[in-house]
Image (cartoon, rainbow, N blue to C red; front, side):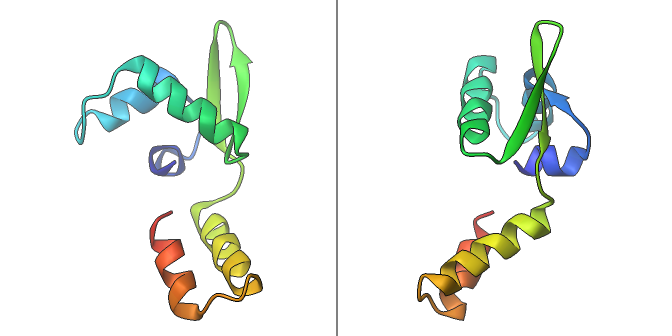
Length: 89
């Protein structure tokens, strides 16, 4: 999700894979699988463009972090627990 948030525009699996290359070399199918799993969890949305999906964030990173913190507080967690949760985003 970090690469999609940084891009701030729709990205194909190939574009996300290329954005990951400086840090790690992942197979196209690995990136595709992870993006599909994230899509099923509702983090990015996707639309078909030709034969490929384009992914874009549903919410900003800040909004996603705030939602994780809110969910932690509602479940009885502490502010410290919410901080640890938000740092994983």
